[in-house]
Length: 288
Image: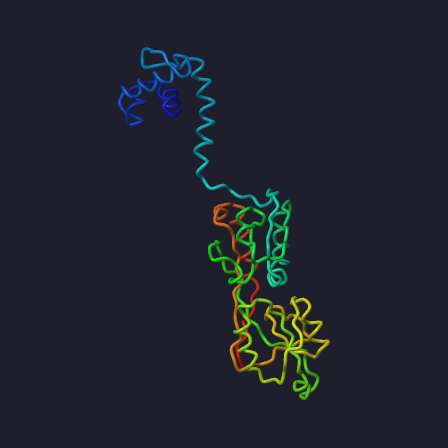
């Protein structure tokens, strides 16, 4: 195709051979094959070289478009968020839903008004297969929840803290004998249990709830002490109790199948998700 277009431009086998760094014989042989393929002379000899037939001129117009499109295949696509119309599915832990996705959904709507964001609960047992089969596009959760084979990006860090209803008097702390546990990940049990034993409180476990959203209700109802991620403590009714031991930290990461890494939409969404998290400045708690 490039040989034919160069012949149309140069109208000389000699100049074409020089421009393409091949011999004149090679140009003549290729031209012969083109004539056989299209059953047309394509070029006829003239005084100063060759002139194209009408069919060659018509073919050249088509080939210019084809070559331009082929050459653009390897170039990275320019993503225009305002034109994106697809549905994007995120499986997220409860923590990610509460801390990250509400702000991200708002930012996504501003930049991609035609996109549909679908948020599902994170199911640890099926994350890898769901991403592989295209049932979800992205998973967000604690690093340990997401298979190491997936591509990942850290979004933010947090720590569990000991939280209670703000005391009305100094004696009230001693009356807090109930501990509300909001964790459900078995890998944290040993770490958090060691930390619980270092608390300067007379307490015992009476209740375990599966949702961070439920914890404030039970803290108030039981006048209880609870272990909660520090970023979830926006309620002014609660306070963080000091402890001798450093609270256990954890990282929240986004994970995806490697095939999506070069997708312009995916890359744009990950960058914006990271930006939303970067704007959530929050000092991590320290031990007393």
